[in-house]
Amino acid sequence: MKKLWSIGFLPMKRRQIVRLLATSFVGGLLLTLGLRLMNPFPVVAQSNNTILVSAAASLKDALTEIKPIYQQSKSNININYNFGASGALQQQIEQGAPVDVFISAGKKQMDALEQKGLLVPGTRTNLANNRLVLIVPSNSNLGISNFSNLTDSKVKRIAIGEPRSVPAGQYAEQVLTKLNIYEQVKPKLVLANNVRQVLASVESGNADAGLVYASDAKISNKVKVAVVADEKYHSPIVYPMAVLKSSKNVDAAKAFVQFLSADQAQNILQKYGFLAKTSVGRR
Image (tube, rainbow, N blue to C red):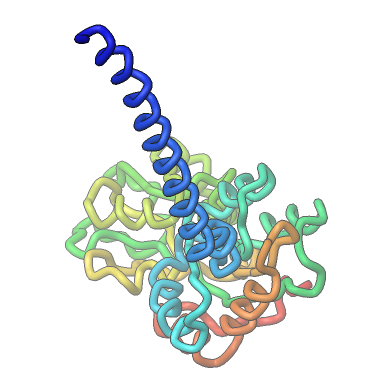
């Protein structure tokens, strides 16, 4: 009798297990379908509502303030920023970075992208202009009041951007060369990855002086401007911007570029020390 009960029990248990598995499978399938109906293609939806703006590091404070103002009227659009040296950002774009808008601190980087056919035709324009200034720590007692003072033995370290990738460094190199002091100060130069690193080096006292934009000097109370570079000694400091052909959100990118050219954004840029945009370098 015990043996017959065991034989009858096993098939019954198998049937219960099969029914349980079938129920779980159907329930899981319905749950999955329900989630998909509630949130179809979430990655695509997020991408369609977001634009990535790669911009020169010197624009960080101004663009950060502009973002929430823009999104008050464009609540369906999210803006992400990628700040860095213009040359490095250019290389990222050339290597396929999913950038919608590029804002450079120099014509050279934008020209390179345009020559490679990477810009949406007709979207290139100038955002703003700037000035190059020589800064020193606010408590400096080295008596630096002109560029020739940089050749003094008491000046040990001078911070500039890496000229190969940082437009501010290119302008600095041009000024020092035009003034015929580049070779003398070259051993003192400390090269930074972007202009904000130059500012930080002078703020901390790790550099006795540095060459940055007027807009960078304006945001810091730890440095003071010793000299404003004469514009005849360097190329025009222009901030061109454009929409990238690789953008998945061309219309949204165009709308943001147009907003940056309008009075509200331009006023914020000028508050941070940028100069009103000119036609210099416009394409």
